[in-house]
Length: 86
Image (tube, rainbow, N blue to C red; front, top):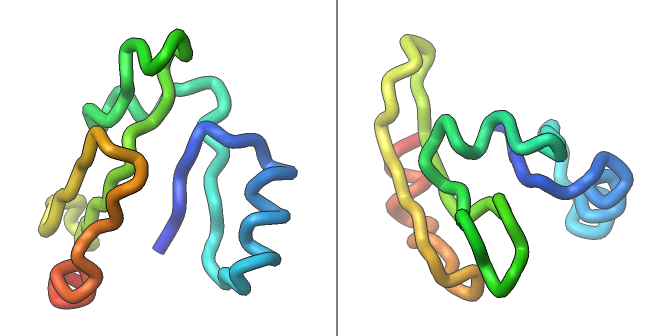
């Protein structure tokens, strides 16, 4: 499992420590990964290129087994669906 966001590495470190995360977090600070998955806002309240909240489950063959994307950053995915896909 890996988490990816456009936040910087120091933000990721504090976030992971606060929530006790034990998996890596990738900083896509230069916004190179998020457009490849189609989860980039072109413009969100004047901010360019932010990442939408999304979950992808990708198997070892790089096949997407589950995909969830929302335009509303306050919405969380159905965790039962995510766990079932894993």
